Image 1 (cartoon, rainbow, N blue to C red):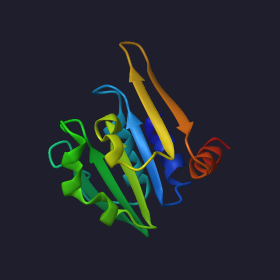
Image 2 (cartoon, rainbow, N blue to C red; image 1 turned 90 degrees about the horizontal axis):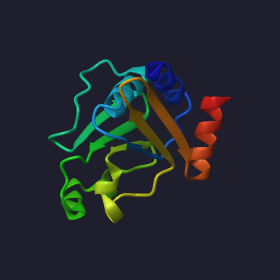
Image 3 (cartoon, one colour; image 1 turned 60 degrees about the horizontal axis):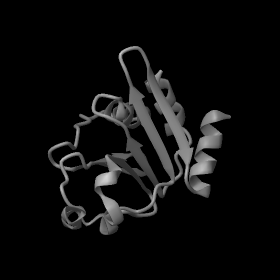
Image 4 (cartoon, rainbow, N blue to C red; image 1 turned 30 degrees about the horizontal axis):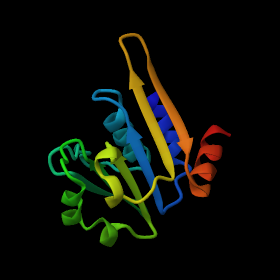
Length: 141
């Protein structure tokens, strides 16, 4: 189910776009990103950015920046990533654990909130901008 949602989501991406992925460990954030990148036609290895903080994937005309901020202790650490320099008109920025990035991050266009318990997994999708609204209406339409 997560993979099919990621495929629909991929079909409606219009950069520049910022996507926050929130939820506990093991709820499906990285699984979603991998499925999204695969749905966009990327055939290389899709590595988790848990230790390096940032992975970049080029898919067709899109530049996907995948950040995992789980290990970030202070938002000042993000200065070294030069996000402002990397974020261009063709960029989709996917950020796991965005709460750890504080003001160093651009605001979200879409928030994906993952939750999981012993029985069930839930994904809540919230548009936070006109670009996010357009994406969500395309995915759900």
